[in-house]
Image 1 (spheres, helix red, strand yellow):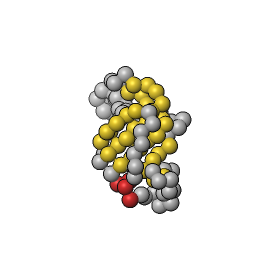
Image 2 (tube, helix red, strand yellow):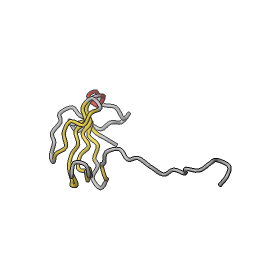
Image 3 (cartoon, helix red, strand yellow):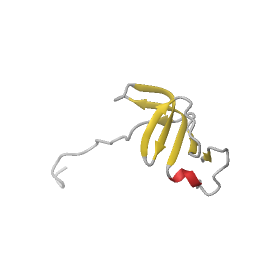
Image 4 (tube, helix red, strand yellow):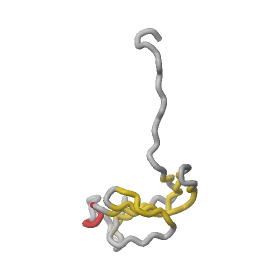
Length: 88
């Protein structure tokens, strides 16, 4: 459950500025491609990651407390079976 940057709760899961800005605060950010692994904030603006750093201040953004959670780029499940169907 998130809250607005001004401290107001989101009873209906909505915040006026949240349509465009999201701050994921305090999660363990792991991105092997960028060599990142640490407790950081992630600022998303208009659906694009704009900044990853500790202590980001984003007025008007919806804030999600990710303390104790892992934040990563998208994960892909490569599990597959390559055989002729019906002949297992």
